[in-house]
Length: 155
Image (cartoon, rainbow, N blue to C red):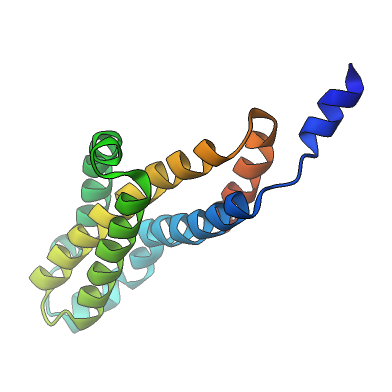
């Protein structure tokens, strides 16, 4: 009985699963990295945008609030529109939010851009998880989770 368990545990990943894991790994790493990346620049943003520290802290808060608010909606949206379509849309919204953050001329625009970025970032991980779990067997789950979690933890 040990042989089938060992064989199932070392079952190679299908090409589709490998692609899914790679895409989800990159998207999730970016989303998680953005949860803390602004923390090191709060003082600089305060000085450069001529805004108080309390106002600039909303740059971080807006992202986290939007990220948390969108997660419960992702299951419904994935069933309604399809997980792959929703994942691509989430990446697009995240990317547009990132570009708008880079082009922000005021603290208000930066806060709004970070909120938009959070909407995209909040959908990336749950929808990505839906995609790779649909393509992997139960025996592969632990290995796939570790492949995705390590870059996220490093981010």
